[in-house]
Image 1 (cartoon, helix red, strand yellow):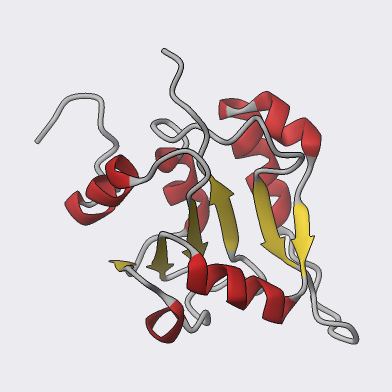
Image 2: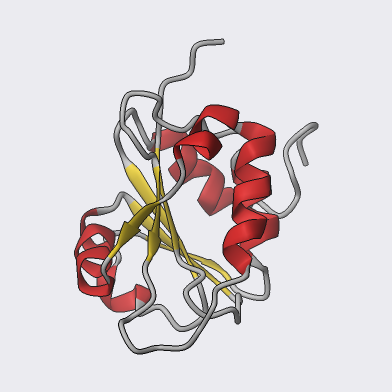
Length: 145
């Protein structure tokens, strides 16, 4: 055990977060996301929700201030009636840790474009999140402290 490290962060996830560098991307995916077939590195966090994991990750992980929107979401497929209320939770969590990124809003990415970005991402974290359209992609920034 270590001090000041959120216990929800597994050793495998901590290792990946440490390996990542400026501009690398990580996907935190819901339970429906095809992570095993899309990931270069797959991290399992089954049973955990994305909001709790996102809050823990952003305690350690800086978002990229040099891009217009360092956070991307998978946009709702045209004709689908789902309203992803989880996005407001994300906005509040990001606002708490990275106010400028929260002000920038989310990059809304078409489903298949999101999949292609996930294939190129440094890692995909699979969760037990059941909310639809809960996938979130984070672009790592620089540590200045």
